[in-house]
Length: 359
Image 1 (cartoon, rainbow, N blue to C red):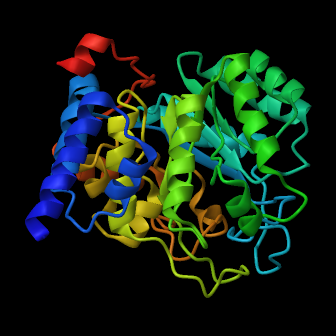
Image 2: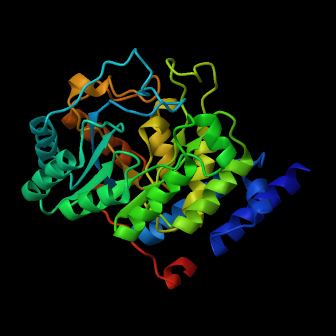
Image 3: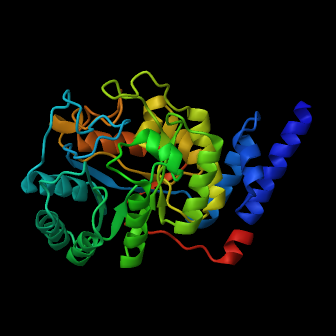
């Protein structure tokens, strides 16, 4: 029976590698397989090397506000968490982060924050314009949540190139268990399609092992992303935060996160897929294992060290005490140690022609 399971696992991996898709029932088999994923990771790494070679792209993350109007049940900076020491970076502090990052070779800046009403469209556009003027050769990525289409258009016109907005779960019933009634999955999806329509390079993604998650939820996530066709897919393990309603829920696993990374690489061959900080938090070698499972992006922190331990979406977050120089050096060593090379250009998605995928 064990041999049959391994043969079936190999058969599913081969089919996914060749066709970049499986039926729902086949995806369920692969996601729930009792077998080790050595063949899955080998196929995923082989495919990413066809398209991206050994390149791992670096994005400079600037966590500029931990204020948020939302009250998502899993998030450490949720509105009703009174234990959070709130902060906002000034424009000058944000520009200092960019200057440090540029000197270190970063050519993508990611402005990430909670949904903070203080940052009106005019304020956001002013920040974007300052960065665009100072660093015209850099990509500017926003990760600031759900906005009206008109706001997204203003940011784009001001010079933003990319937008990251994890959908977190594509299943309505599961979404309702993770979010308050004031939020809706329909609006989250609307935002993603608006961003695509405007012309952004768009990132979506989901948590692995979040409370009440099922295999069917994973399949719904994969199908949704096939419809959206995002440029970047960010997934990471759900990690419990002690000041949320889910404080007693178990965190997601390294094994399932890596399995989903491998599946994503084979289903979305030319997507940009990060090895997340959360992956490195649940395992000291988590990011290196992520590279070997198909990931090809890292997002080290450029935020001032004084505020890093205040932007805690989950417990035990790593790299909160390192400055930008230490963080970059550490990651570069990890990337090279895993058998890849860190690349400092903008790292746009490479839409792979069919002949490469078949080769």
